[in-house]
Length: 171
Image 1: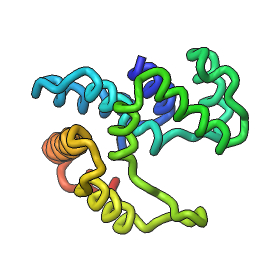
Image 2 (image 1 turned 90 degrees about the vertical axis):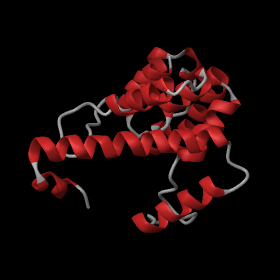
Image 3 (image 1 turned 90 degrees about the horizontal axis):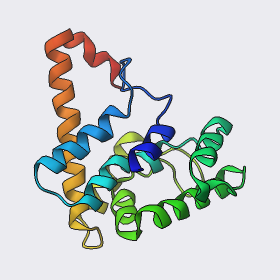
């Protein structure tokens, strides 16, 4: 069910600079953690780890697909903020507070409270500070490590296949 949610949220998303469906990434992150013996809630969080960051809650196609697939989303309001609140509640009801806490711990803040976009460096600094705090579940750090490991492995594979020009896909 977590992969279904991720599949709907990431349906039109591709891995950066490729035609590879984005869903392959959370699937691989979950497999890395499974190979290291992590429990099911961590694997579920891995499947969902980018949904809060990447959901386009204002997109009627995303809204419709989630409403049609999951009864818990049928009454979600159409406005972006209301939809996000309902989506978070749905995640808690469907997968539990511990899973959502792990997902939220690895979710990058992309905007300031006033709505302006954070520079990439500042967002990453805030993410690292959050992961270093005592309030974050230890399992979130394992998930972030698996996420980073998969990204690094993919870069190495792409370098082997396409050489240095592939680095142009990154800002």
